[in-house]
Image (cartoon, rainbow, N blue to C red; front, side, top):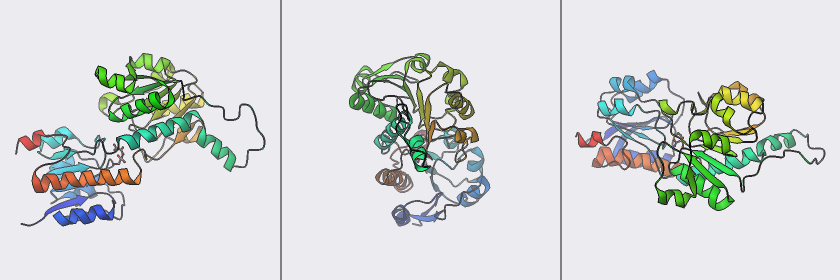
Length: 328
Ligand code: 8YV
């Protein structure tokens, strides 16, 4: 039987490519030059499978141009780069990479929270610039993590991981807001109390965003929400660009309407809103929350498992639209 053809859209571990080559004819973008949509379509034509990252948009236009496509396996838990309805309509399976990155991403959320509240990068820039000449009582005085109130918007697996770290490790009072309330047992495990979004914004000392991006979550935090937060509060976004109105946030940081922010994701990334680059009270990282070597390997393995599982055995591991399987 001839091997199915797949496209690996971005540079990935050579071991992952070698494994995929055992099962498929693989074309891969190991040069990792970004592809335009037209180039992506051109490469995807005639392929049955695609190994994608959050950067490749798979929508009705791509699907119409690539009728041989049967599966897109995302090496990411978030999948807002997929139009899942359009994929289901064309019987194309969508898979993501949940669970394997939960704890690593929760670790990073906490790291960014601490760096933001304790002004770590701002003070390092000061030191590197040779400006440290004397001790002073208020030099880079930030806000406390321990004993403070942590507000989490989006209480999925990663949000729960952050809640546990905050409550059990740092004695924080944890409040959360989510589309649906957790069951009582999970709430007790996370030591988290459900509140309205407004109450959370008004009372939290530190707000962490872990909500998936959908049209409904676009600009979950804009000027009105920032105005509800305490002037001493910090905001951390490890979810997706577009959840925060970056221009409104830059203005709030400039005017000290909130104390500081930590951002791993941006509207229009890899571009960053120029106003954010001008304010000192923000920690900026280039979308690396899941970036540890073991976790990136596990994410790549899971995307490969989905391609092999579906195209070879008709058993994907983490399907997002299982209706496609039922219709076969
Ligand atoms: C990915 C992420 O690194 O999993 C996600 O949703 O945001 C990151 O872990 C990124 O999307 C590239 O695929």
